[in-house]
Length: 365
Ligand SMILES: Nc1ncnc2c1ncn2[C@@H]1O[C@H](COP(=O)(O)OP(=O)(O)OP(=O)(O)O)[C@@H](O)[C@H]1O
Ligand SMILES: [Mg+2]
Image 1: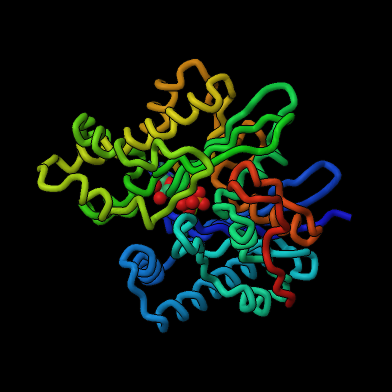
Image 2 (image 1 turned 120 degrees about the vertical axis):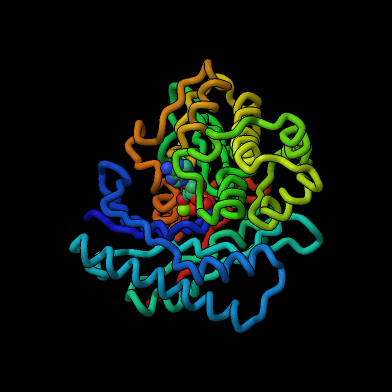
């Protein structure tokens, strides 16, 4: 009998909670319903304060943990209603939660996501798997990125190497070779700096169709300073987040220089393109590239990527049968399935963990 799983993902961009219902059948693992629920502005503000100000009162943290879980449960119950599926038909939910802090290096590495899975299970009546990252960290891994294992399972091709490029808030690549273990890491900023800058200058959440960046020119001196950040030359395994690449990081580098806002916007797009393409040229200069995440909708970003990687074929994951906006949601539906089947997730080459582990805790309804 076919089985259904739900995946919930809300990434570093804080734009929306993505929800996917996936069906496991003899034909494979397919998306059957999906939605993107925008994060309410007040919740977004609170999460930003927790992530970036690095001071948080426990009352706010606890309340946002609860509120985010309610958003998840409501999204699930609504999507079940519109897709005419019953909670009893769903084997499990895979809920990533909203990351509020990711600190994989240092003496005591940790990663923290919110969105109480007890509440999600109780409000939906469906077992909920969450806390996917910390067992990998317990084995010495970075706990991120997790999606390369899913990319390998769904998209690896025995005939030719492939690269999956996810441009979310942070950008990450998976280098897929059916003969080898999955490989992948965060290349650095995806949309996060472009979003932060236009938010600061124009009070917009993102630069729709790169219209603002297209009014500007690349600033070579600023680009050189931004590109000099040690993260870009760090060897993998590596993962990063909003704690590092945020508006304070940018302002610190801009320092006392006076630039036109649109030139900074254009430069941030170029930084994103260069940091991604340098890693692709290093790791898979002959692989076909499949893009997913919101960055796939940024025409300037995509045009510059194809100009720099001009010998490689660049398409979105549509070409592989998966909606590029829901690859991450699908990944968490798949991770929920793998957890329920008690499968080890092959990630040691990605995260640097000593061994592959079963990822996620199950909260039974
Ligand atoms: N039309 C568009 N033009 C330019 N940028 C866009 C457009 N549509 C979406 N984006 C960008 O995509 C971002 C959202 O992407 P996405 O949802 O993949 O990120 P995320 O939630 O951080 O995901 P991840 O799970 O990978 O961290 C937006 O914040 C915006 O910057
Ligand atoms: Mg998103």
